[in-house]
Image (tube, rainbow, N blue to C red; front, side):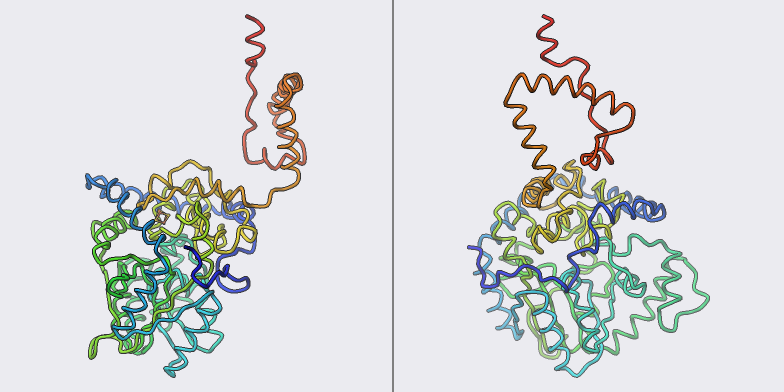
Length: 474
Ligand code: SF4
């Protein structure tokens, strides 16, 4: 069953799932930025190495991957009833559950909830879902100031920038760029600030500590929600998330409906998979869990906003629904040869890299993101790296079939089919291909309108002798 009563695609004009330009255009610009490529190469190589080493320590890594994959498939197959079970248990523990069909509805719900508290500022735990729906912009439009508390997210926010990696949103910045951003945009920063990483971290800590102690409303995402108990979980590395989740009076959590796991014991699998695949750590540094509200301890008002924004439509696609299994570890980004060269901005969505290339087009409808399924060499490295075994290459091919194809391509395919059906014509075509080989050698590639294909690829050389020639000669 896939109909949850909210069959909406992510709406246009709100949120960050669609870029201003197609992937090839944006990628070409990114490739021209050598500083960006150096930053990306250094960061992805470091994370890859660290992650590879700790994964190699586990003899049952493949079994853990299979368990994670099976748990996610089971969850998706029973999503409606598990979501209702979650709602029941969150409500019983003193929380309030809201259902949001799309980004507009979720933004309205959160803005109204903050307004009801009378506060004009919220602190935020790093959250992909709130970036997806453009919550910061919606809050600002309502006169409410959102402050990102994850260090990398803070760098992105102060720099008026966009995140370019799921886990390390400021991966495209180096330390001297970060120093410049802090000097320009951080309130009361020391003008003598250096680009030494501990000095930069201390400046952010000072600024954030004051903000934590004086803000009464927090907005978070969630890595997992446990249907059996109504418990929410956030994993992070800095402890800033823990401050947001415990210090304020009101906590509002925005969560994609796919973040569910059926039972508490299922976390045993995911909390082993996630840190090793993402940051290359054996155990996650800060794992915060909460169930509703507890009198006298932590936030006294808790709201959970369950977000669809196109996910039901993804669930309805039997091939594409695997994308909902993603636990946002970012391992597929770190191994992707395309991502390593272009960075995240070229994907035009908050979800970059291989997972973005399959998730964003499904959330928006492929017609709104038709170039993303092609942002891959189909090398399969993402599939091998994914801790929940999402077969990204198969989804990419599946989505390419749904993308609108240019008329020229359809005409070329029809001509190829016609030729291959007729042996004599096919033999003549092979002779013609030899001429094309000579043309290719001269560096001319294919003639217009097919030259786009050979602009970024080597024209494959036809063999000197075809099978037919060889056969005839014997
Ligand atoms: S698709 Fe797999 S590897 Fe990529 S972010 Fe999601 S869980 Fe991680």
